[in-house]
Image 1 (cartoon, rainbow, N blue to C red):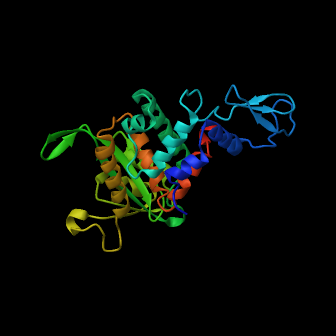
Image 2 (cartoon, rainbow, N blue to C red):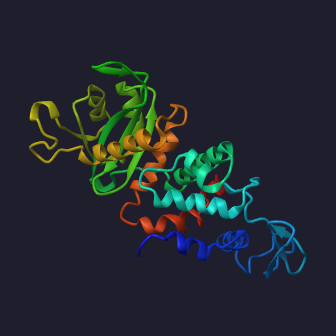
Image 3 (cartoon, one colour):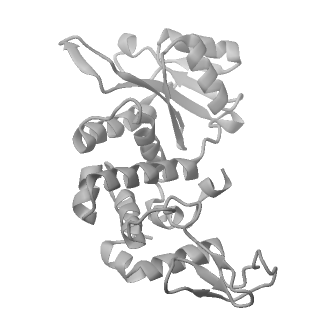
Length: 292
């Protein structure tokens, strides 16, 4: 199945009413038991507000309440189209691009983009990687900051990345690369029986104390990225390449305060790299933040 194209998108969601009907159907649906009269009901859309009314008692339900669309004055179709843009872009969508595409203010576009990224992160979740002894590659990336000189940079934000071989990624912004910090993050996000592949950074030494089967790759000594027994961090290195290209090319720079949102967006997209056609439907049909 191919991803939805723009013509198909507007055929499915031609106006706000169609978008609201979609939200109603995926969250409630006809026959939904009215919370007031407690009867299975047929629900009718109202013309003067974004709500549906019970056929028996007239009780209203609001499909947008609790979702990222709640309390927004932006047309629902523009919200759906913004999400469509996020699912069809390989390198992310900047707030400036949303402003141009949607015809909204920059402030509105920035808020929409932030909420969409949070929605992606909520759907993706943080299930531990590496169950059943699978290989998990771990590496750190230093993002942003100013150039100090030709040999190094300062003020960078540290992102710790974990990728299950052939599976999902999980990223976390960390305050430092101390062994204690790294081991706590890994212990929380990687299953105990996993085999971990990492480079020679001293902070990863403590992972053995956590009981992990740790395999190291000395890239400098080997002059390669694959160890003698297949140890590698190529998958997570590939993830970093795409993330950094996006930040430098699409977003130019990202504040450390919001960096994890952007990293989580790419985590979501990476984890669906084999099924990108499911992203739009998933983002428009699942609302885990309602259960938070």
